[in-house]
Amino acid sequence: MPSTTPTQPPLLAVHGLSFARNDVPVFGPLDFDVAAGEALLVQGGNGAGKTTLLRVLAGLLRADAGGIAIRGELTTPATRAATLAYLGHLPALKADLTALENLDFLCGLHGRRGSQSPEGAMAVVGLAGHEDTLARQLSAGQKKRLSLARLWLSPAPLWLLDEPYANLDLDGIELVNRMVQSQLRDGGAALVTTHGAYAAPPVRTRLLELGRAA
Image (cartoon, rainbow, N blue to C red):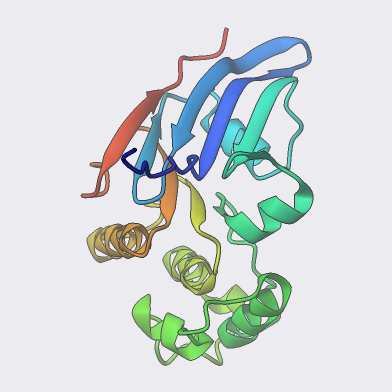
């Protein structure tokens, strides 16, 4: 008999996922998956639930119904920590640490890709020379770039990116696109939210459209 290659489960699979706030539905039920090597673009206006969806996937909010599986297994805090890297609206930096100290601290919490260094990540995102600058002294765009450096260092195969182009100039937008391209080439995946004001990253992309909450 001819041999068959077993099908790999998607990196992330969501089934019947719903979330409500004060008994008012925010989104759902949703069914979608994200495979290694692809990006899922989540679009919708204000109130559609884009940020809430990413926070549920990251384990920061509890869903009202449905399931989330990583590589075919229901998620646990440990599998989320090992698999997901979340980039939210806030920079998640300690204001009185330097840029480099912030990266060292976050690598201590979340680990880092063995081929990367904090200094190298700062160079990748255009912050070389700011290693000793306190985070509170950085501009909004520089803080966003420092958060992108943290993402670049992360060993997590799935990136959850909430409006990653916000506070970035055209060079910064191109930086995000290059980072997503590299992540997918390395066998990772990305879930990216957007209002639709920017083009999708130039990668293998599918679309998930969220409607405005009632």
